[in-house]
Image 1: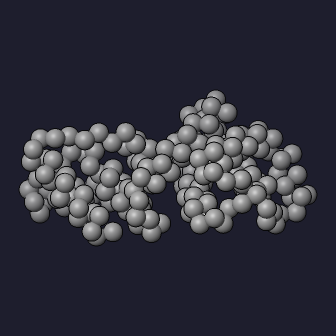
Image 2: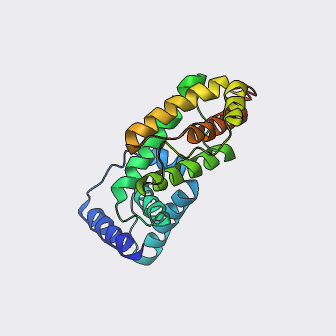
Image 3: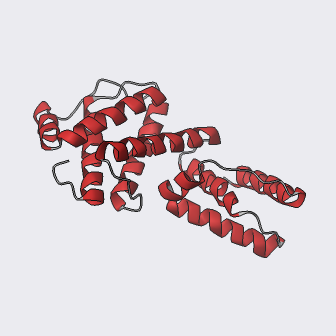
Length: 195
């Protein structure tokens, strides 16, 4: 983490000195999906101001946050973290559209879902997410499907989106887990108990 972060800081200071500003199109998503990491990014800006007497633009908190997210997955390619964040934003748009309400991304259920998705990305990258290997009993999957039909349908759309972006076939178990997460989001966000 130290070298990429130091390298980014060096370029950020150079840009600030030259009056060059960079746009980070995922800033809103980063603040919502990675609030702790974004707090770190803001803290980093504060330290830069104290130690270097340079006020970096508030937007610079975004790449600092993404560097921290990146290290949590031992990934040297920050572009993969950008892609993952974009996919998360698309997933939350799919869910919001399916339920006809904007999603309040401050709920703990959103944080749990993001954690699940992050590790899904890691497993997919390692080739550990495939179509086979369903462990849940068919009766359990059917119970989830019938208990949460709207969440099941929404999770199917999320599953298709993930399969497209990850270039993998996700299992029926993964569809069940996605359904449970979507149902929990609907309950916590809009109090839709049988979503």
